[in-house]
Image (tube, rainbow, N blue to C red; front, top):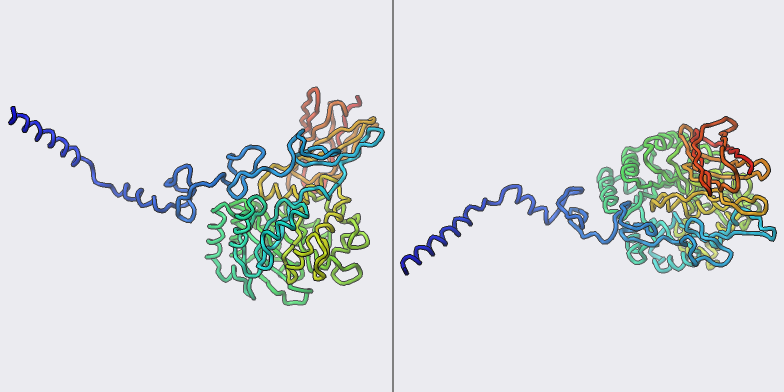
Length: 529
């Protein structure tokens, strides 16, 4: 029996050993998979679902991903964190007395003793501000910038580094104050030629790698043609706008849906021709022409109108309007060109019409921290601490835009930046109209800029203006209270009848229509009730 037990034990041991030796050796494929655990390749599946491949390393996701649905409706994915949208929520109590919560904003509504209403008062003092063009610099800390933003009512800012700082200065501020800043990939300048240009293809590779991280929302601000003072050629920086390296960056803008911003003074015919080639180069890129285009040159609303009509992917920001404190007839007093009489004036009629007509294509920017007096600009962001820069810059801008129609001011000060950078849904245009002593909301959702909506109480006609680029097609969805105008509408665009799709229920009539690009007048005619 003892001998038999020994034999059985040997048999068991043999079977176990045989089982081990039948395991195949590690294949080349297995070795490859093991090696990727220490690194990864962009967009390959070697990282698990809870990880991102960043700089060839699998990094645990810290929150949401840009443009994914991980955040609920009341939150944005900002710097990989789900951040509560600034504003109010429909019918909650976060708005003060005499304010309504409309499109997540507290809006002052005026109702007179006859219970009739006007359009929303353009209360710029209480409007949210997204400053789309400021600079962070070594002389001003992130906490000081936040303090100035809070005093101004600015919920967010787009930071551009300055003073030779690299992208890290913006990222440090973002990490300190999540949800308050975004950053673009910097295109650093130096005495000619520009640093990013001399690096050539390696800079393009660097810019794409930065965009892949999800930490950056665009590229720029790049000085293509820039004067550090008055225009006396040659310019301080000049890069032909059709330079191949720059066009590769424009392609990155299209590929990553990341706006690209630039400074260009159109004072030279050869430079302008190259610039026009760039503007038409990639229709899928989003182009931001800083400083209302002209900056050091006298501003020209007719020229800006022409550019917007020709290039549907072009935006302007308002940053750096030179010599804000200088009245006419002093040289280069662009602020005085915008305003009626003085620094504290409101927009003159020509500029008022321009800003309202193109209200969805203009971003507010202050250029605080920019230029040789950057520190002084921050000191005077909302104050009069320094004589070296315009006093109370944000207050001046609020005053300047106070005579814009409410929807136009809202879009320029904040809404456009939130749509363009944060990919928030574009808010509908909301117009209050009066009929027989009662107030009604007419909503317009449109791919175009919408302005100048009126309602004729006696004829029941609704008219408004849309503005888009030539050669494009625009569309609008108009929601009209059923108690304001009866159904069976007819529609005209510039006096010509157009087909519409009309849906009605007990409360509203919704009209869908399309129209050719350009500046058009829409007229809707409904039945009298």
